[in-house]
Image 1 (cartoon, protein in one colour):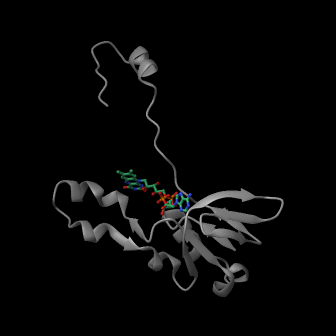
Image 2 (cartoon, protein in one colour):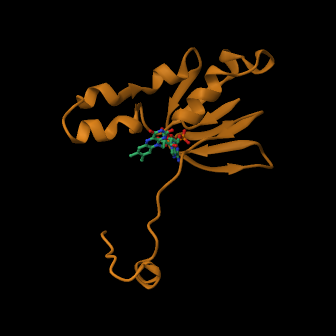
Length: 123
Ligand SMILES: Cc1cc2nc3c(=O)[nH]c(=O)nc-3n(C[C@H](O)[C@H](O)[C@H](O)COP(=O)(O)OP(=O)(O)OC[C@H]3O[C@@H](n4cnc5c(N)ncnc54)[C@H](O)[C@@H]3O)c2cc1C
C-alpha cells in the first residue's frame, strides 16, 4: 500500500489500519515534507503563547513503523498502478491519496457583488 500525505488523514489511516491490511514492510508513506505542522495550534504560535517547535511534528512519527519516502507526488497511472513522483515511479497494490486541500479565496468580483451593504472585503 502507498499512502500519499502524512497529515491528519494519512497518519490516522496508518495508525488504524485493520489487521489484514497492516503490513508495515509493504506499506510506504509518501510526503513532500519531513515535518507536519499541527495547524489547530498555529494561532497560539502567532500570538506567542506556544513555541513554534511545539507544533512541528516529524513525519516519521506519523509513519510509525512504515517506510517513509520524502518526495513530491506528481500523478497517478491508474492503468499501470503506478504513482509518479519526483523521485521516480512507485508501484502500488492499494493507493490512498490524502494530500490535504488548498484554500481558494472567492473571486474578488463575486465577493464584492454578493456582500451585504456596509460590509467590506479584506484580502
Ligand atoms: C488555521 C487552521 C486551524 C485549524 N484548526 C482546526 C481544529 O481546531 N480542528 C480541526 O479538526 N481542524 C482544524 N483545521 C483543519 C485541519 O487542519 C485540516 O482539516 C487537516 O489538516 C486536514 O488533514 P489532511 O490530512 O487532509 O491534510 P493535511 O494535514 O494538510 O496533510 C496533507 C499532507 O499531504 C502532503 N502533500 C500534499 N501534496 C503532496 C504531494 N503532491 N506530494 C507529496 N505530499 C503531498 C503535505 O505535505 C501534508 O503533509 C484547521 C485548519 C487551519 C488552516
